[in-house]
Amino acid sequence: MARTSRAGGTVPEPETASTGPAAVVTCRTMKSHTEYLTLEIPARRAFVNITSEVADAVRKSGVREGLVLVNAMHISASVFINDAESGLHHDYDVWLEKLAPHAPTSQYRHNDTGEDNADAHLKRQIMGREVVVAITAGKLDFGPWEQVFYGEFDGRRKKRVLIKVIGE
Image (cartoon, rainbow, N blue to C red; front, side, top):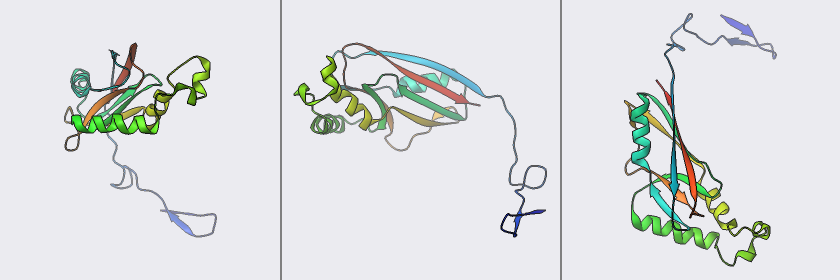
């Protein structure tokens, strides 16, 4: 079957489950599971491996195929995926401090409000707010050496991380 386009030509109809093999849809029950991690990092900056906590949430969810979103729920913290290698984390810390140095705090307009954490907001922007990881056969489906990290850029207080699992 075809339909006429506005330009006068014919456009084939897309195939569906009833007309062809292109779109076969099976409806299953979608599951959703939410957990929150609370972290209180004693230092101003740190990187914390939270892969096992994310994997535990996936296991508890019962989801076999789906996605997990991991979100730093604070504007001066991040979640990112990379290697669990201490030299790399040191390099991140040095690099970020060069890009957005904490001191002098007077260099940032944000700090005119009485805050001293403008650099933490910039570092978070660079490192990212959240990650999404595929779940395959009930497990996190990572590439080689990939793990999930929480990046803290203005610590010394409680902050939360959202873990949201969805799938079948």
